[in-house]
Length: 329
Image (tube, rainbow, N blue to C red):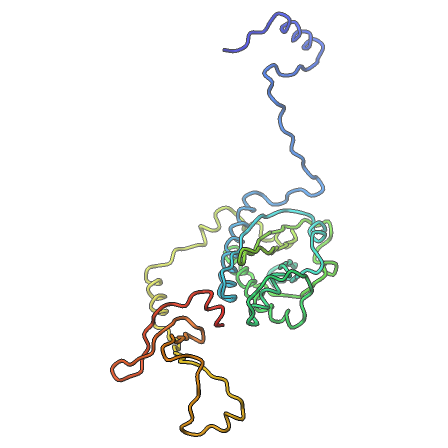
């Protein structure tokens, strides 16, 4: 039941109306919330375009994460965290020293963008590619010329995945123009220019590493007309059944070398030169130990040696685990 006003409240309302004053609401409702708006840095990208950007870079994150998992031989996840609009100067001030910055260009764009990779993750990738265990590096330092060369193949593959993600909007071929460790030497846009910062995280063995993409607005501006809500549905078509069968058949007919290693031994050059028929070389395995089975130079199975129909053969006993595969690499 609604509240009935007393005579004093009615007289108070009439006096306020006559004098032009505004009284507080008798029901106690709060005022309408006020939202701050920065007129110096207005939002220049609509919500529909932001959703399209999120879809594009979600696809890039999945593809690049899959590539890193296969290359590093460990589980790697890349998660898209946010897409923010900020001044280019604000983004540059947020960078640490040293950084791992790749200036990326394309013949189809009228400017450059920045691909920022965590230096700790860069050192982890280099260590893993050189045969290490890929332990987390606690100290930050600049990459050497050799380390930059080793990491360049991974970055090129990441840019290939980014180009494929943008293919439905506009065909773009991206390439690395230069590398910088100090943000002060990177100037791809005026300080006051708006920029779109796409923040991601790389998750490896319960550790997270940041990865960011910075697009100045004038780089994205020619593509804005294509960033509509329905572009993904228009340009994406399902795979036909016949195409799927052809792919399966092509994979099934692929051939890979398979070999079993009974053991190994290390000889000095003097012993090697002195070998004669009848000499016995002691291997590092017993006769009843399982043997390693290599598929295209990578250990994939454990097996038992034996004979089958008067021919040498092996029987697969189990699939090698991920931890064992890392050790045997």
